[in-house]
Length: 166
Image 1 (cartoon, rainbow, N blue to C red):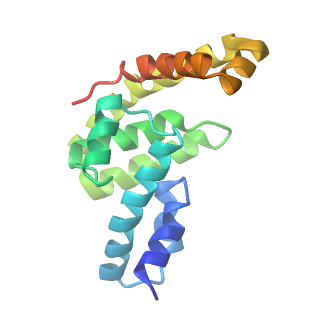
Image 2: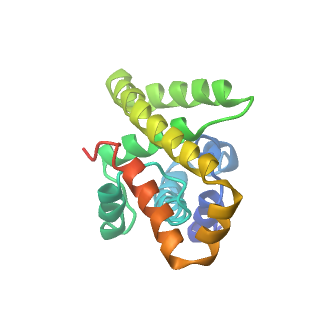
């Protein structure tokens, strides 16, 4: 059983809270090694695909840290995960994440994540509104020209700057 292979498999799963189900057969020490490496790979993948709602400065810090988040950055990441949860099972997923974070980190940690979620959600909504108001012509221009692509990217960065970096 190769830890790197297992970590790569876990890092491809967007729902962090389900990693335990995919590694339940592993010994605790091996599982922890897998999770540490998978967390770094997952964080890098999600940042590169634009699926993390974090302040741009925090993303730069993560990159400099080889994608190994600090405790505060982990809270920011979980807030992003909560803010991005959508669909019919989002409430159930929220409760599962809350329960696991409370069990692992305690009430204070959870309360910090929950407060951070509000800013991440506001940034998500601003990005969504910008994208929906662009229309097909702007979307085509953004996909095919550097000028419009840069403008759209700058709008997204401005929305992400709404999220505190500490």
